[in-house]
Length: 394
Length: 175
Image (cartoon, rainbow over all chains, first blue to last red; front, side, top):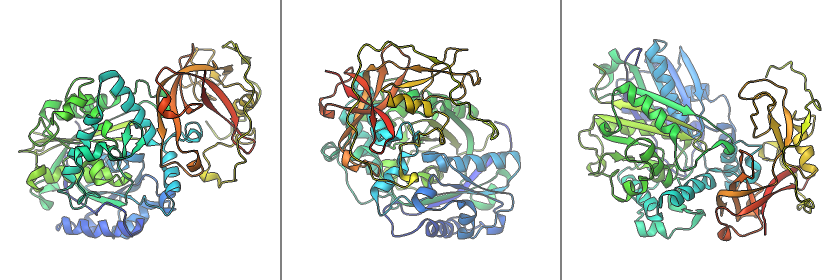
């Protein structure tokens, strides 16, 4: 990697869930929480703000959200102020943009915030908002939304590799169990045993309710700084060590084989290559389990197991505490809910907390040195990956 | 596409690539469709005043699913395009697509439908490999309950009136 070292020195999230609050109020809330979480942070030090927000126009009837968020958070960025939109990966896009800005010297101290208000009085209107993530005039009129697309992914993976509903439930059970240790998770206080998950109603067959992440309200924010400033803010930063992204389609006609995500393999190779590591070096990963089947394809694409072995990887608990690595210890999108712009930021908050051993023991990865964060967006059109290390590059 | 480019409607030569072994009667118009705010309506505006791809919708009205092909590199596009994504030239031709294909994957929407589609629930959707064309199209699948569909089932393309004079297409199980 070239450029200046970049450290993630602190962060926070609001509770995720169906919340009696507005988009702008969540910006205030997460801003206040960020200054509590990073006591050394002074507003005047923050030269840049990147706002991850997928669909504020559709969900909050609000455009131009970057200056709105700055005002609500009490920030006055003097270098870079912008929104980053990449649907479900909007939050990671904010982090990646902040990282790039700092690495090249355009910014020294940047905040990446993600905010999404998804609960509307009309659920059908919210579903329409999600529908226009797809190629709206061509796939949209058929009723294309995420659940039927990922259901087809599951159907093909089951057909080609014998992946079972029990494997899907293993992913969901693990992530919901981790969420039971995360008070900000939407399903913090709800238990989902495997048998219960297998009996929940079908949403888009073969996917059941417990296989699908929810559409909550939530916000999260992190502070990234030039490496030489990291010690001012924390003694336990997470260092950005790699970043990769790959996209090869949007219209569903170009999805290719549904049972594999070579774009993720490519993005992950790039990010891990920059860090000088391989999949077996990862101690934990926050991956995009928008649906249970997604995590199974992600195990495979990341190289944690062979093609077609993701279901077995799940049922064998190799992504659980005590397994090969801990996957989605925060509770995942399944357990936390998926407020689009906030998700990628909240995942990064978990990575820093894991490196600092600041999470409950039931989800703590043992002595983690390397972590990967993955977001896909849309119908897995884009795969975005960050690699974090506990140590700065030598 | 720069802002000053003038539409070249009607200048694309026509060409047929697929035989049309059976003539299918157009389906009865759907129920009248309530007018919806533009930003909550998934069906595109189809007229020549709104899109340079109006020919696609004109052909749908004639019962034909068409798309564009690049005569230079042979690339068959979906959806139809104005410029070839491979060689970026703009002299494309319209071609009719095969009328039948087989289901590659499918699911059903059993809840959580977008606005205006709530009363369609449950409905099946799927990806269909068209016969003899390198295209796998997404669409509604009608004619059989989702629970009785199977991968490999044969379907045909069915253009239909969405209920307000605009046309779109869907698939219907054959047999």
